[in-house]
Length: 580
Image (cartoon, rainbow, N blue to C red; front, top):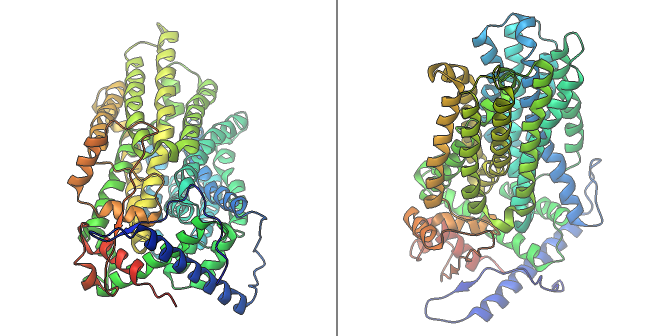
């Protein structure tokens, strides 16, 4: 048996308690023995299999440094997504005139990317399930590159729309893959922070896109250079992704335990007690999921569990409500039409392009706190603190349109920019949740299917908001009332999150399974008991009761207090895992 490393002082092993019996010490000893036996067995198998040949395999002295490397390159997909949003904003000043587009055609060009992303979202399940997370990211880079090149060379409206759809399909595929890849590879104390890095890269891409637009302002056919510039970044990301490994959880999901352990050693190591126990927990949980699918009513169509399994259904509703609140508060309409909106309050074309950097910069700066403090403060804190900022910023922007920029330009532009900075800054933090939450709440065997639904919903929402923005402010007889409508959604969303949003900070993906096993009303009662939560509010650990008997679905159904088979089966597998 391998030597037992010193226990990480911050790590809390899962607790197994039996009704009426205090065996905490014995359970912890048994758990540690199981973990060490599994790790020793895997080390022996790796040594027997010999070294693996891979021309793209690289190693760092510290697994932590390797983790940061793969997270940065994977998150570059966010940079490409943000880059497109701001590039099209600058191109909107010139592109419609050059190609002779009317307002509806211009709206469709803008909305082509999110519409294509809906198509890309439906590629998530087959690509992630059969090809893996890494290959899915590589395919998205290829789609990005082709789409951007076609945008730069577009000669008419149909070609431009097709190019935007292809580019959007790359956005949709990587948008549903990268957050999952990051969530499956990093340690739980950093998961929220590092998944939030994806949104930071989106914000950085938006600022970079406005800067690129400003660089090409004086060139003839400048919109072609603006839209084609993302080819450079997609190529860099594609090359970098060749050097990152596959997700260990996906490999284990496919039964490739040996390579899963190889990757785990590279990106997480096995020196700390935490990493060893998390690998054991991951293996046991996935064994349970195999049993659940084999004995379940939907084993031929496991994706149906998203609707028939209460635990999965709660995650589906929760994740997609977060996306709804992120999209239907108007962010993409404001981003895609920012240069046009700037021009409507008195800025000329050049000023409008440069002043768009204010909004992009506010979004970037607003994202930074969530990247560093997502796990410290928790998901509920950021959600409840940010939505009031949406409302305030949107109201100020809306009020600015009630004044004439020709009469009092300083007042109009001052109100608009103040509201824009508040809105974009607060949204920067909130937007991280729309990536963090879906990436962590679905069970592993449904994660690809769940992210397909969530990503499709995200980009469909973006398409609906973007395509209908011009029609909405005409129907509302003004941009101000239209933005006020989005602000009203933010107010209603705050109450939803107050009652229904569970806290998942500092939890492994397997522990989050147990959180969503609880009935919705239990979550509501807990939220009411603990609200308002502060950034340092400790979230209680969920104890996992012990089960006697074999790891079968029938044996697990007799356990309490959890509602469905899922948690009870997980506990049974933990207890019954073969220790040989």
